[in-house]
Each structure stands twice: as C-alpha cells, then as structure tokens.
Image 1 (tube, rainbow, N blue to C red):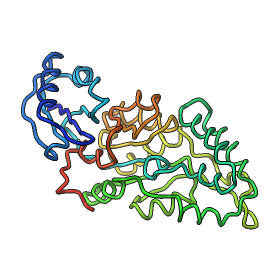
Image 2 (image 1 turned 45 degrees about the vertical axis):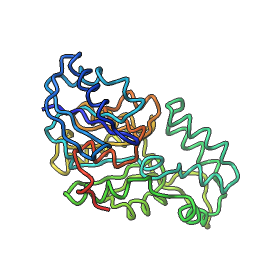
Image 3 (image 1 turned 90 degrees about the vertical axis):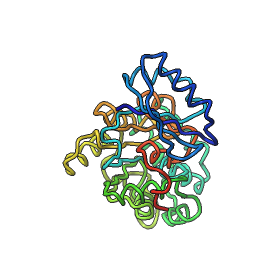
Image 4 (image 1 turned 180 degrees about the vertical axis):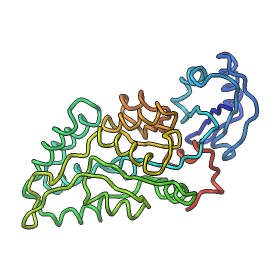
Length: 296
C-alpha cells in the first residue's frame, strides 16, 4: 500500500493530519490507517491511490514539513550511497582548506556555482585545486581536526542502517584525505573520492587520479547494487548539489529513494524526497523506523 509520511521540524498537530487526508481525498487518494512513527513529530498515512496524485496533493505543505510518498514494498533500504560535503558533514572541505590558504571567498564562490549546476563540475574542481598549489599538506589534518564535523543525525543513520545489514558507500567529489577519516568515523564500508597530489609536503595544485564526478557517482550506485545482488528499489541515494543529480535520478527512476538533503533547487527537482526542515534522521523516518529502534 502507498504511504505518505509527514515529518515536522518541531511539532505535528492533529489538524494537519486531517488536512493531509482531505488533500489526498481531493486527488482521488483514499486515506486508510495512520501510524505515528514519533508522537507529534512524524506520522505515516496509508492510502489507496496513485503516488503522483498524492505528491501533487501535498506539494504545498513542503514549506512546513518534510514529506515522502512511496510504496510500502522495500521501504527499508539495503544500500545507502551518499555524498559527503554538506551532506554527511557540515562543511565543504575544499572551501575550508582554502581558508587556510587565505582564499576561501574566491573558492567558495566557485563551489557554490558548481553545486548549483552553473559550472562544469570537473573543470570547476580542477580550477579550485589549482588555486591551492603550495599549501602545506599538514593543513589537511588541521582542517579535519578543527572544521570537519558530522552532519546532525549522520551517526545515528549509519549505525542504524548498517545494524540491519545495509551496505553504506561514501562517494564524494571531495578528497580521500577527508573521506577516509569521515567514513571510518561514521561507518561507511566503501569510499570513492578524488586524490590530492602532494609532493615534498605541499599540494601541487593537481589531482593524482581520475576525477570522481557526477557520472562516477551514478556508476558507483549501479556497481554497488550489482555487487550486492540488489535492485535499485532497495537503494537510498542522498546528496545536496547538482553533482549528485544523476545518482539521485537513477535511484528515483528505479523505484528507490533519491534524497536531496537541504538541496539546491536543481537537485530538489530530481529527488523524490527532499529534507529541508530536519536532520539526517528524517531518512530513518522515511524508512518507517521509529526512534526506539535507532542506534545512538
């Protein structure tokens, strides 16, 4: 049976549940039972009708709630493929490295344009890395220690999903110098990222291997599913920027969950679930997991 899940930023009042059911009915979706995932916070509304009609019915509630509409089948995912910067961690690592080089505004402006889809990702990445030429490689460790923090809810999400046997993959247009420690801390089993070239203790301004870009992310999603013998309906892909769009779209087209986490508009249009009001534990609510089953 299809399910509409409402997740509030603060509190979910009974009136909004009635409103959501009325909206569903107005779009030929007959609501049935409801199930609180967390009292006053998140609720499942089961209904009979088309997913596309249900999404239309509640679309203008998204300025107040995080909303996901999906089929009950394979709701709990066995593959998580995630971006890192501004998704699993709170910062863009290249911007923070640039701060140590004294050029953060210049690089951050390029990052934002690339993540919004205004610039070719690979060319924008090479241009930003080139500006870091000569930076002391020790600044990477300092940046990790001082700036890199898990996104709220990330550790709970990873621990809970991996506890039921899900395979977690971190795939980033960022750098292995950061993805390795982040993956180890959060519990990712597999990592794909770019490699900064370092010589004589300093960044050369170049990359040491092929670029991990949007096409790579999509291929990593496909390959992980193939290796595990899963169809992509069992996958959850999450990211925040234009570089994540092919990966997100691939999950959506296969019937999986493609999530935009506080997404740029272009990515939000490709996702079938956008988290704008909550932290990453919203992805557990989306999978029907109640807080008493979360692993802290």
